[in-house]
Amino acid sequence: MIYIFSLIDKPDSGALRQRIRPEHKAYLAAMAERIAFAGPLVSDDGQTMLGSLLAIEFDARDAAHAWLAEEPFTRAGLYASTSIHAFVNLWPQKAGFPA
Image (cartoon, rainbow, N blue to C red; front, side, top):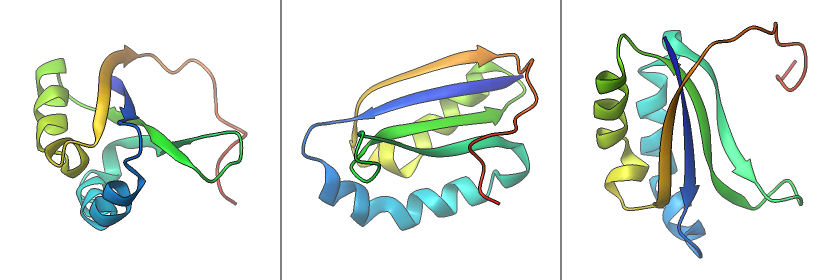
């Protein structure tokens, strides 16, 4: 099952996000074969990072929660809020992906 992670940063946490980002990206890379999509949530300026949106396949919700608990941004205390939802993809993606 694919699980959607909606992860919202604490206010004024941009410096922390940038410092931990290499660890975060390495952690995601270890799951590359299971990631449907992943990227930062940004403000309307397209630059200011506000959080993360991830869609990753896991065998069970417990595994998704365990993965998030060890995620570097989570461990660093970056997120103000997190939510995980099961997701069924019924639409073939055509937009929003890099060429």
